[in-house]
Length: 288
Ligand code: FAD
Image (cartoon, rainbow, N blue to C red; front, side, top):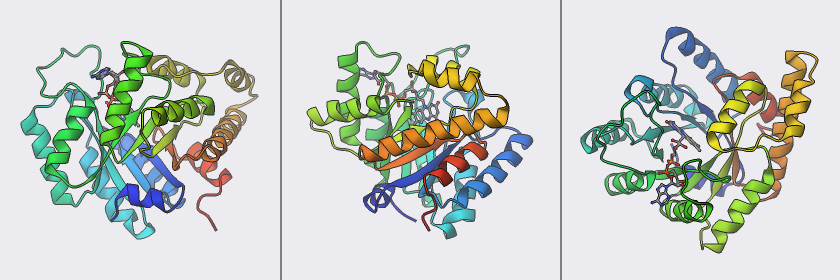
């Protein structure tokens, strides 16, 4: 298996993100989604990790399943790890488990606790602290989350950019929150370069097929959901037409991001294969 930063050196990568399901129906759907999307030969697939105890799914099991089933297609698997509600001992155990599994890449995150959950006493407040802790214990690639439009809880745009620059300086690569305008990514790269940071930053792409869902998540993440895109989607004559528009929007954005020098594209799948597969096909993955 491989370090993702090395895979990025070989040219633009494709990756897909999945959520670890918490019931049998979700597991069946994810199994089918993985099988469908593996045929696009992504460089890696990543699996989320809930920040609150109740929202934690079996991330480790799915990372193992991806490696067992799709390593033969060259697909690497990367677990997400959030620190906001873990003790140091627990994080250490998780790192040891992943070491035993032969993991070489991890996405280190702070995470967000569900609103109804009390704040536990925690060992780590930020992703930077988690990344530093992992770095002392494992010689893996450490990825971090990037927020080109600014994190919603940032004290100020300037403090946010400075924090993100410090975080990316420690990381092997980053993956961004999803967005719909390449200008935000371009400006983010520019601001980071001005701070001396050249860590590879893979932009996140979310095919906008579910208008209400995108509106809700965009508001939570501080992501601009452009009116012209929303209006096109709302005017669609059927769900199939809406998906076609969402795929066109995401593929066009993907082209623009690659033209700006993005080292790859990371597609948020929401565990549904179709739109993600159509974006990959439109952009020519797998290359013939
Ligand atoms: P951090 O970088 O620690 O902090 C977030 C923000 O807080 C910073 O951008 C900054 O504005 C502010 N901040 C923190 N420290 C400082 C400081 N010292 N000085 C100034 N400002 C500071 N969540 C999950 O629960 N599970 C997942 O699997 C998951 N996967 C994700 C994958 C990707 C690619 C992305 C982009 C996000 C993901 N998230 C996930 C969401 C993420 O956990 C939230 O966005 C969370 O609020 C921030 O996490 P972070 O690692 O960016 O935090």
